[in-house]
Length: 239
Image (tube, rainbow, N blue to C red; front, side):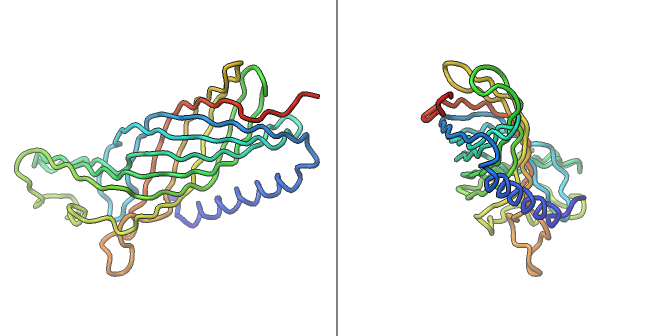
């Protein structure tokens, strides 16, 4: 399994690459395109947790606000920055196969703020372009809810005897990690329509990971699909 240190190095590399692109802006064609809008989609979430808890993906909607600034066209690459403020319900759904018939789901609601470097290839004004985006993402936990089911609660036969997560409070309200994805954008006279697929790898732990804590790792992993609509506020004039 890939370690968090590996993803931290990726994050540093992304930030350095974006900084280099910004510093070399005079080489390409400058842009000053600013657009805002809304997004909505569906997320598949689970927890990367040690000791291991067997899980299935939990499906929940997400939605939020998006702002994007296009700063440069470098050869065929359209470069910009996108920031979002989203509401998402993360957590996990346990796959309990010990014969008890129990079910368990933990809902962890967050406000998430991804700051993404975005690169596009294709048409700027009218038409379609391919998108790639990556960058850091921050989150603040708002609420935690547990759903128990399956009749009488029996934990005596849980695999690995991992049962401490039941009733455990969130220790770390602040979440951080790396987000990246690909998508397509259709630009029309009415605005920009983006369809994206994105993956989020959490680097922060939900529960205490110290020597006194139960879990050595408890971080979010999310696969999401979203549709975003943007309309132009400022647009670079054509020469």
